[in-house]
Length: 173
Image (cartoon, rainbow, N blue to C red; front, side, top):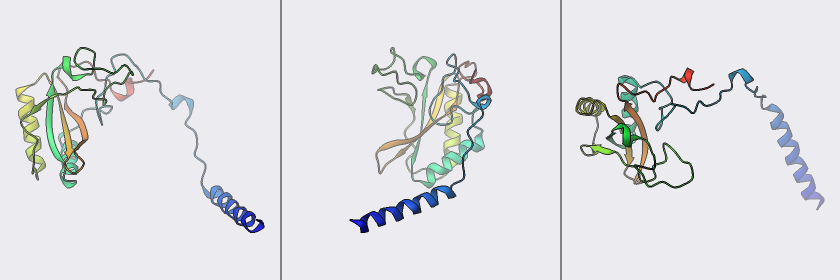
């Protein structure tokens, strides 16, 4: 029993020594903490809290998709169907919102881009979809064939007269 006690005491001493080596993290100042502005502050999947992505930023995301053998796909929806609400989705009553699909589907632009090896193909399709549906939300999603799931999704276009986006500096009170 004393051997076990000595062994655990050694571990505890080692743990304390390594714990002391970890630098302390300073807590943020209260002035830097933010309170979410709930009014007119809707968001979508990844990156939607940022300003709209540039073509170069979208191209880098497409390159990431292709490098990971994901299949890119474009989807679009008009304003009334883009957000989850009780009118356009079978809702669970748990208060979930965007990024929680709950039987909410957007219309697919053509077929998924199986075998896509060039990001420019995707960017050309984004331009074509934008011209065909200038007042629609357009998102780029990626599917992983091995796991059979969607692994990425982000907006590439909001309607020009959309009022649902707030700059990051306006998102808190």
